[in-house]
Length: 359
Image (spheres, rainbow, N blue to C red):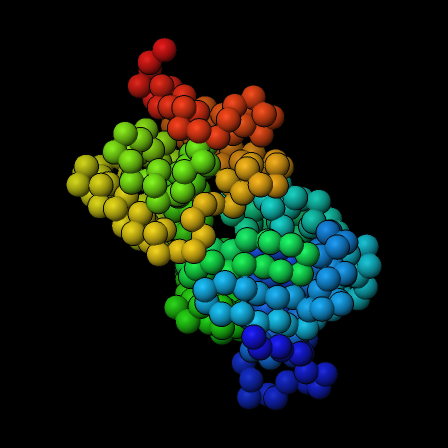
C-alpha cells in the first residue's frame, strides 16, 4: 500500500494543477476518492466533512482508499465546516443532494472573489448552487464510479465509471481545463464536455432506475436483468426521458447506459440492448448495490430522492409530461425509509402494479 504526503512547497509551473489548495467539501465516497487521486497527483487538497470521527481519522492516520483498483493512504488536513478558515478559489462539493443548500451557505463565506463551486453530486444541484452564488461561479460535473464510505478514514473504491466536467453554458474555460487535467488522475477517460446538462439528465434517468432497484435487496445487475421488471423500469425511465426531450436536451450516454433507448421513439430492441449493456457494466463492478440501497439497508438514513429525483416531477408537470411512476417511486422510497415497507421484490411489485393499473 502506498502512502502519499502532500508537498509543502509550491508545485512546479510545469505541473498542470492549481498551486492553491482545492477544498473537497464532503470527504465521503465520491469526495474521498477524488481528493485522494488529486493528492496522489501532487495537487494540494483540504478536506471538509461534518462527521467528526471521519475528520479526526483523516488527520490522525490519513485517508485510506481500498478496493480492486489498488490501495493507498493519502495525507491531508481535514476540518469540520465550522473549523475552516480562509478563502479558496475552488470548492468541490460532494455532499448528499439534500444537503446542498445548507452546504452552500457554509461555503459562500470561504469563496475568494473569483471563487467557484463544482458539484460532484447526483441530480440537478447545479441549479441550487447557481441560484445561491451565481451561474458564473458554478461548474457542473457528472460521476458514475462506484465508491462507499466504510468507516472513519476508509473509503472503498469499487469500480470505474464515467467522469465528466463542464461549464453550465458549455464554454470551456481555464478553470474547467485545469480540473479536467486533474480528473484524468481519477479516470484516464475523463471528459471535458460542452453538454454537461445532457449527462446530468441522462444520470437522472439512470438514477431513477437505481432507486427502483434499491426497493429490493437484489443487486443492481440482478434487478436490471429480470425480464419481469423490465417493462415497469422502462416506463419509469421513459417518463424522465420525456421530460428531457420536452426541454430539447441532447442526452449523453455513459457506462453502457444509452439514454436514447428510453426516449418516446425508442424501439424495443434498442431498449433491450441498453438493459443488457447496463447489466454487463454492473456485473464488472465490485460495487454490486447502489449507494441508495446502502443508505436504506446499512446506514438506515434518508436517501437523496427528494433532491435528486423528485425535482423531475415538477419540471415534468411544467412541460405537460405526466409523472405517475416517478411520483410513486418517491412515495415507495419514503415508505422504505420510514420502515413501513421492506426492501424486497414485493415492494418493487408495488411500482409495477402502479404502472399496469393492477390492484
